Length: 318
View 1 (cartoon, one colour):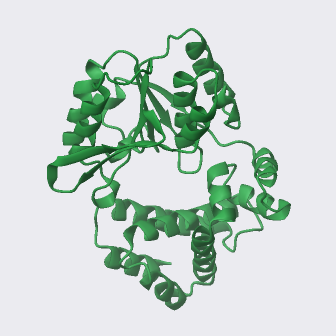
View 2: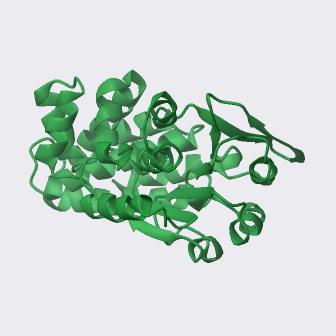
């Protein structure tokens, strides 16, 4: 099974494997896991096993995300369309609006496409990433098809938290939680993917076994720079250097998404310090206080509070 490629999470793999083998898989699954735990990869594995039990090139392409994609333009409900990908039997939907919110045009385009019976495949799969980004309008459009789906269609949703998913969507899904793998296993896996052993061990400790986060930080230069800036911010917080923190954070005043990533990485350094990890400049009470302040700032940013104000207050509070 493609799902066997997911590290750890044995209970999830066994349960979904039994459902797939008996062809009794629920038509709607919800995979819940924080960023870096591989919920999106797990969703693609399940879809590939559902559509292509024998594996093959199409299954491999689906694992790489080479499927159709539902897109739309903000403010234009009739602009939705499904862009054709290598794997025509699978459609991915991910937020495109402000803050990564779903656009109703994406959902209606997907809904029209899956009622298209011209394909010869026995089944279809719809991958809905970050379902917590759905607003009421897009959720209502999705509910219409989830309540009476075409035969053979599997919906696989992902979300960073169960509470973030609207109850009307959540109640129609069988939910599974993803968990980090032990840091040692994470380091071994990432080293097998070409990450230098010492770097794999350091990042696995920092991200507490979140394989996706480790691989991104090790292999993506832009992601690596973000992490370096978070470490610099952690050093400023440890030293109580408000000026250095303000200068660094000023670069993110027009980049809310980047600011949230930066603060989440700062939380990772704070958590490492609370565990006594030597990789973090923050230790003890400084780590606890920084984690609390960063968490509050993330909460405010996610609720559309002015980015510049949030970051200035955060820097002054360190």
